[in-house]
Length: 393
Ligand code: TGC
Image (cartoon, rainbow, N blue to C red):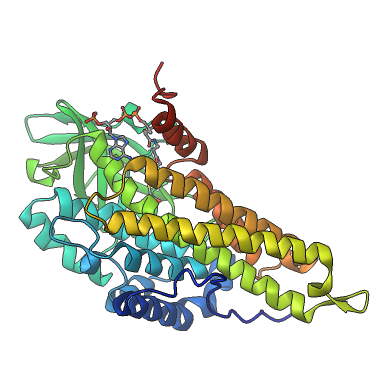
């Protein structure tokens, strides 16, 4: 069974018909880079748990990561264009969007927004070009949903600051040149910018994953790592600043997962047109049509949600964390449902890596859980709606 050809996007109600010329241009650039460099080897990369180290520079050379779309204050100049880039990357695989999310929203963004001039000069150009790789170390082995309760500490000593603790689920860790690490200092939570060649840093790749197999996920131990004051990100001085970075990445996820869901639906429509059962095309069966129609509706709702959040983020008022939460919660759930339904329609063939839907489906299980688990986002919206804080004791 050969690989089904990936057509382009799926836009049933012309949600993206009125993009500006610049937005449409970014979409096309991302689409052609993904089609040429990422899509051809994606199934094999997933199968072999392999992240091709040329990819960051390919993306960087086409300006697809980082601050080309940011204003000087660190906001996205065109949030819809940024979202469209994420949609194209995740149309191929959630791991590629994850790479770009971490590099852009979780490493370059805090440097740009909270870093010193020398940190910006030293790191931003190479990170944008994909010549340096970054990671974001917030989550710890005891759990990711309550980062305020972190155990990693930054203490003062005669030689300088000392960093001690363990972080887990750090995307890009094994290939990173620099990591944004969050630790409890004497004056509260502090973000530091740490080159990975410092003595005392041990990075271990997490193996045996069944999802996001292309991503290099890691656990990192900081064993009394010696720092200087200049390694701190001066403005990154509270848990709120770490969560602010996550807002940016979560916004990208809202768009990225549209690409994954579209890829599944396009693949399944093609399959239904070619495959025959009971001497009739699969696409002619009422139950199949009902499932396709449900997917089409959910996906279109997700596209409208992303566009509206893009408009809000582009407006003067900006976008509030609970608005990001409703988008992350809604669109990842939608994409997972679409991917599961498409896998079902593809039948036994749907479990093969020759098709894309199940790969997207298992990736989306991770996306459902990371960068704020699904239920955490429901509770953030619940808090906003009721004023009652389910996280408080
Ligand atoms: P809470 O008391 O509500 O807030 C503490 C301070 O933070 C502010 N804040 C935010 N600021 C900006 N953006 C947000 N989204 C914010 N949410 C809260 C808040 O205003 C407050 O500021 P201030 O000035 O009043 O002190 O904090 P809490 O500890 O009760 O937490 C609430 C909760 C559960 C919503 C929060 O902890 C949360 O979002 N948890 C989920 C964390 C999460 O997403 N973790 C997964 C990260 S993904 C990962 O680790 C992998 S990294 C990426 C990769 O490598 O792939």
